[in-house]
Amino acid sequence: MTTRNLTHQVVHSSLGRPVRILLVEDSASDVAMTLAALREGWIANDLHVSTDGEAAMDFLYRRGEFHTAQRPDLIILDLNLPKKDGREVLAEVKADEELKAIPVAILTTSSAEADVLRSYNLLANSYMTKPVGFDQFLATIQQIQSFWLSHVRLPEGSASPAGSRTR
Image (cartoon, rainbow, N blue to C red; front, top):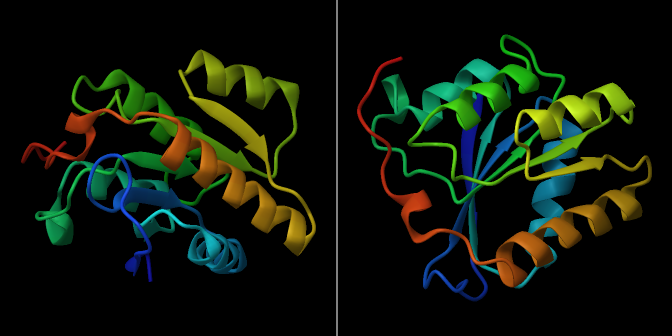
């Protein structure tokens, strides 16, 4: 399975609706831990999971099965992905006039300074290294949720449907 939708609602964000999150992650255990952490949070969210970079771009560009997809308010992106690397996804998102305002939070196993620098040069909005332990991973996801979903004002237009382009 390359994509799925998982919805959890507690209270609405400042947007007045659930925050739409695109999680681009190929590790089933990391997806499960992310979902568990978001369930413990207090902000309503609609989580869409893409397990490879090509599926993520299909979702963002509303291609194929995603022709009715809503644009996410936040992208949580792993760097080491099959089909299309997370660095390529980040570069494509930030180069596109219609997508570049969507915040991209890198969450990856790489702590290499070259990856950190390259991600910020490609205009990532944040870079976090995945912790090894379960409790630390949950805490990291909850910090992402706290910062991006309750402290930061997300652009209203980021959730409008993407254009019907077929790149």
